[in-house]
Image 1 (cartoon, helix red, strand yellow):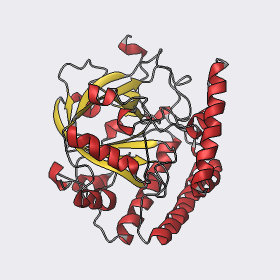
Image 2: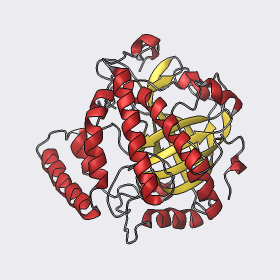
Image 3: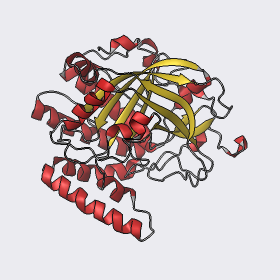
Image 4: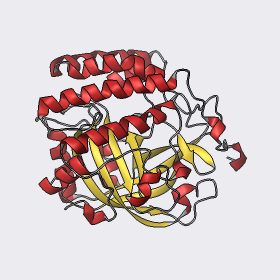
Length: 366
């Protein structure tokens, strides 16, 4: 594909939505209330999304020297080795049983990267780049308005008894299968509710929403590369305990290493690959995912008491922690700026923990 087929980044690619500020404020207030209710339930503050951790990883990102110009953008224009931290998580904003299928997250923090910071306050607290990814390529809700409309329903669903949630997802898997047999594409809503419990380490994770990629626009993904994790792709997890995924991750990294590739899918057409609607799947035939680096994770203890406390209570992940050349794009990303900030302030204040960014890989305990 010729480089000139890629859409150039400019501020005009974003279009503020009607009543966006009011919608964002409603979402922030609603999620603050939900976060407070979860705190009262556990007497401990957790994240308002992806509350439950499955494991925490230390690793190395390698950015190769021979990337073509259209991929050598942002921090990926600087080849070399970078320490990384990863948090594996479950999507709901409460601590639910692992027996109930839900989307899972792969939050990646790349330490000590060059570039001008998105948030000025980050300059004195570290020079890291966060990419937050989920094992779904698109969001069920793609705009801030749809998010606001669906938020009460999603909250009520998360509060439903475990057996009800498992039954609903079983029905949705049946609907998804019938739609696929008919040769049709299931909606993002059906896909989201039909989640299967495939092994968390064999999944591919996506930023879902777009971000600036230097001179261009992209979505970021992470996919299994080594045979140790490739062989887990599509394999159902056998979960017998409420925190069974934590145990699977721990057992894996006691005996295995893991390699993943990090990839960029560049925008080639703003109509077919919109920035403002994260529910639209970008066509891989038109713009394939291209490798921009590799991630290596050695054998390690993924859930020691010290590592859990640091990663759950001190460590923060935010798509706006990063450099200007990877600015999050679209209304869903704009609402995240305020929601993540409010949630982080609440969590650190209620747990009396410092809000600091790691400067060294050993800031995460072994």
